[in-house]
Length: 236
Image (tube, rainbow, N blue to C red; front, top):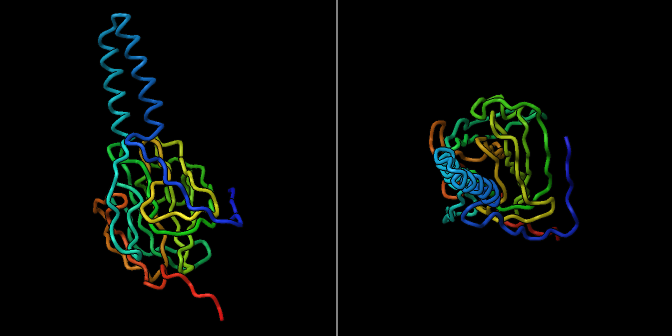
């Protein structure tokens, strides 16, 4: 496991990707369109149509719609589109309790991830070595994953975890340790089917249940205590 530590000066994260189609989609889609064109020139009509269809799917998969972010600084917004596969209490490795919301993304969901709360990135950790189905509860602990820990203005730690699945093999996470990220900002994605979890303080009030559908940035999955997002006062 590798861990990055905070830098001295926290810059504001520049949200990305912001284009209507994520850069990965342009690369893959462009290659498929080129292949389709070559097939058409070679009078291979069927293969040309297959290439066009695949290019269309890639553009659909990597779509990156603009969203109106849910109001309320204490509101924890969904970090991804998809279906809630877990919502409840979990025990952390140190024995403490927390609340976790796990969201499964099918290949038909938007795969761009959004920051669930506003905060400073204090740690980025990579771990895991398995590629279980993303909807399998064991995936949260065993699969290849990237965990980003945020510290809110009130000093509360919130963790958002990008988790691979059976097909997903590449996690993209643009922020660096020390960055300040705004709630709802787009910050990365996982390629081709995945899961994204949010790990919250035990006293967070969950607003979703297992089986519900959520939309990144727009759906509220939990609410933090007001003091969790209020700036801390300096000691006198």
